[in-house]
Image (tube, rainbow, N blue to C red; front, side, top):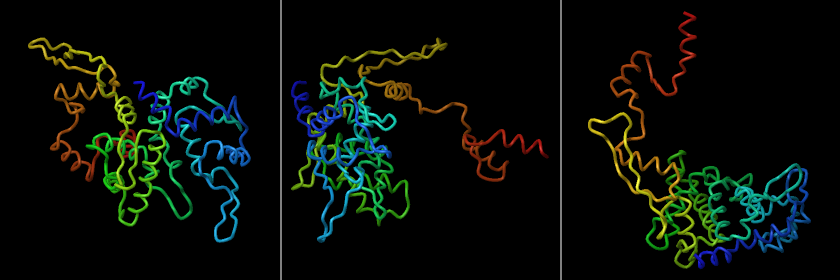
Length: 315
C-alpha cells in the first residue's frame, strides 16, 4: 500500500490539484460567466505547468485569448475537480468543498475520487469548436468505463488501436454512418488515455502505441468496482427463498466485503439462476396477440393506460 500511496502522490494531476487548492484558499472570485479570470488563469498556467498557450501567435498574427475557457488543460483540471466534488461554484465564487478537503492529505483516496469522477468529465475533456464536435465526449459516461474495462482485462499493455476500435464500436451502436467520424473518435480516445496518464493510473508507450495500467491504476479500478484484493475480507452468505419450505430453496455464496449492493444483486441473480426480470411479463404468444388486437406494434411497458382509457371514454 505504501508503494501505491507514493505513486498516487507523484501523479502529475494530484500535484497540480494540491497546488491549485493552495492557490484557491477559502475561495476566489470568478467572472460574470463563472469562469476563472484571465489574470488568475495566466498565473495558474505557470503555477500548474498546464502548457496552455495564451495569446498564441499563428502566421505572424496574435490571437487574443479572451476567456480561460479557451485554455483546454486548465479547464480540464477545474472541471475534473468539480466532478470529484473538490471545488464548487457559489454565486460568482469558486470555493473548496470542505467535507472533501481531507483528500488532499490522502493521495490514494484522491486518485480514487478522481478516477470515480472520470466518466463524468464528458465534453469538458475534449476540445470543441464550431468545426469539431466530440461524440466520445457526448457518450463518455459509457465510453469512459469501457476504456477502463478494456485496460483492466488486457493481458499486459493494451494496443491503443484496440482502445480506439472499442470506442468506435460502442458509438457505432448508437449512431449511423460513423465511418467518416472514426478519425475524430480515435483522437478523442488518445485524449482520454492522456488524462489517465496524468492521473498516474496509465502509462502510454508512444513507440509501441500501447497503454498499460500502472499498479496504482489496477488497484484503483478494482477497488472502485468492488473487486477483492489479497487480504480483503470475504463474506459467506446464505440466500434462501422466503415461504418456501418443502423443499427449502437456498444458495450459499462467497461475496467480497467490498462489493457494492448493485454487484451483490447480480451475484444473487446468477446464484439463483434468475434473469433479472419479472415473472408477470407476457410471453411471445401473448405479445403477438396484444399487437394484433391493437392493430400495430404494442409495448406493454410504455403503454399509456390513462390515454387509452380517455380514448375509450370518448367513444
